[in-house]
Figure (cartoon, one colour):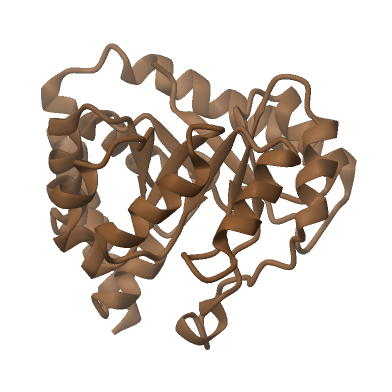
Length: 273
């Protein structure tokens, strides 16, 4: 089954273009608390999305789901989540948690009014994962490679894929039967680690979702709508055609791809020094 693709934007016209090319989830990102400090000096974007963007994007969509990443649990979480639900969020994501207690609060605040997805991106969340996954009300899990590789002091986020850490985490989730995904992808043959090799790892590991990253198309830099239309039309077509081929590949193919990922990650690390 094709991966569910997610794309972050607070621009209604971009959301409509992305939806038109079969991206299943449009993502409004409200997370700001603590993010500047932990990603200081890195090539990451701190979101400027607002609660009003939830309504604006919801009203622009016809078939895609609206996903909202809220802040880590804090004193205002209940109010923030209530407002997201009121404005039409289909899926609400909890980032940067470590303990089951915070996840339980989040699930209680959502209270079944939207689907829930946990973003596992801390060592604490990984260590406490079995306890966390025993909670009722978790619909999906996504493994956030950016923050998690920072916590592990890795130099390249896909080290977590090549060293078996992602597989270790997905094995735990698989036992519970909750859908899961990990990381982000660029265009099929783009990226320090080409997306085609990452997508094949999604299939090998039983993943069902991925993020289209800024490397796929960065609307923070350009909002040339004709160019965005072309990028998503041909980029998504390439990915879907490749996925059709993957559906018929052999275990040997996926094992060879896993080894290729290890080699390519090591080549990146050698270049970084």
